[in-house]
Image (cartoon, rainbow, N blue to C red; front, side, top):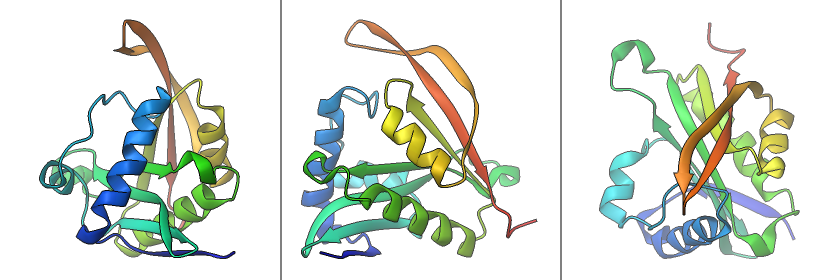
Length: 163
């Protein structure tokens, strides 16, 4: 079956929020412990760079970008988030979403994408590196979840199209 990608719509929220909850449940995708409601989520992410992946017509993954700062000098820098439903891991859906999101970000004038990924999440780190991100460093004990400290790999990708 082929993977299709299209803009994320408000009507996708049930599927997207379920996938996000699955990510929360892994304990290595986010420090969030509760899925926000649509209004909170909508406010956080750039409306121009939100996509969903469809497999067999069903939403099985999504990618979004969040601004890193409100300061004008950082208007071209965003943090990337990619989530795929665990039952669809290993089907190149994450790669399709991330590569599409990169293209979309450049068409919107963004020059740098960054990601903070749990150091235990080797698959996500490898995916980002495969898609042109570089590891900038490791942020040790950057956050605590359920009483355990976690390190994050900090990665970035600088556009070759926007100078």
